[in-house]
Length: 241
Length: 368
Image 1 (cartoon, one colour):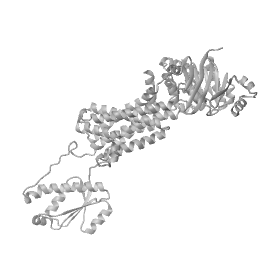
Image 2 (cartoon, one colour):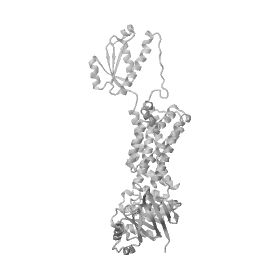
Image 3 (spheres, chains in turn orange, purple):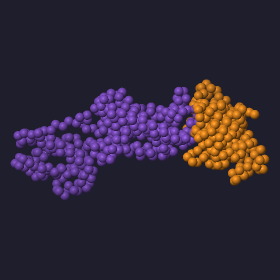
Image 4 (cartoon, chains in turn purple, orange):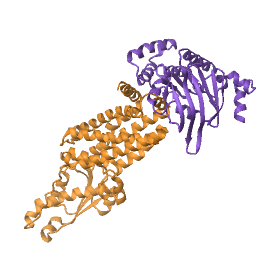
């Protein structure tokens, strides 16, 4: 079995009497794409915020990239990347300035930034527009750039919170190519999504219902287990019951 | 430290690329100081007056000459009947009519008393008051110098001296006030807007996931505004002294140090606002209403605190510009040192601590 990069045991998060996460237990392996699914309000975002160190759990044992979520938040933050549904680039800054800024806050030196930026921009074919403001870029490009910036500092894990919402199917497909490429470089991808066709691209999937993980396996095994044609059916069957 | 500077540089990009921000930052202070300088003034100049002189003798002529040579008044017309007085006021050009009794000098000699009527257009009460007071003063001056010697054997002449502002210049009052207003608005409003902008565009989340600590984010966002507000404060002091002759009698270093303290207070207030406001617009609204009005009305900037109802006087205690204005006036006009303003300094420092404490508290609970 591959190395466990995220270990979660009995994660509980309460807001007053409301239980957002009810004893979540799961592991994520190195270099896999882990799909984190669930209806709106099922508790996905809450769990993800805890894993990113944005919020602290009520109880449970959580280990991210070898670091404890209670005591080693600083080390966790250095080793993860994050991209939210609304891309987090500054529209009034140029491509170059955005990369420099984000790489800078992760502590990369100017020399490292320059070298990696050249590689990245030629890979994305953005060499000529490096001095253009983000505001002038088409949506699809911004998203690809946002993802590339999220993994610019070579994190062990990248958390993607509905990264493709509001994008056309072709761009979504291209976006997933970037995700695959990242896993080839040993980066683990933790993805939440609304699109069930995207769920099929994941190595393993967990589905949350009302704060609990109701299913966790590879897409094929889940379809078998629920006797469903596709992931959409699996999802509907699970959430209806 | 390097991370921090990267952050500050990014913040400067935001500021220099947004025309509106630039306009507020650098246009507003200059516009305000000039506006306040020329608009809000307690001095009167070139007021148009008319005369209804029923006696037309040597003394009334002398009095009129003295009034007109003062520089405050301009002779508009001569009136020949009571009816004409009302008509003249209705036209609105003449603000004061001076009426001399019949046989003015003769009455003065014989009865030792003669009367002058001062009729002013009080549709603007303050101005009317000022005009009448000025005229009165000139007439009294005339009386003591020209007439009394011959008639009265002894007299009391009060010698008035207006300390710290001999000529009662309005600029001495509004430069400290404008300084407080502008620093308050720019520092608090701009920081609250720039922090809520990060929230609105979701970049705040990304920053919080990064290795940057929340305190680093906040200080990084605030630093450029400290620098820019400081530049603004210096602009106001220089403009005040060049255009309106407002002196800095005390220590400039002390004045600048107090200014930095006040800026810090305003910034912490801005941070506090940003923990409440979700959008830039809300932040701007709160800054405008919660900061601008009290600064203008309750700080003693325009209206004296002593004349307010007790409730408002009590509220004015927690309006920080009130204390800053006292400090600035002390240093600039009276030239006093720190030992005269340490209490006010302490109050501003205390308020700063309270604002920072509340901000940190709210920031943490929001993250939970």
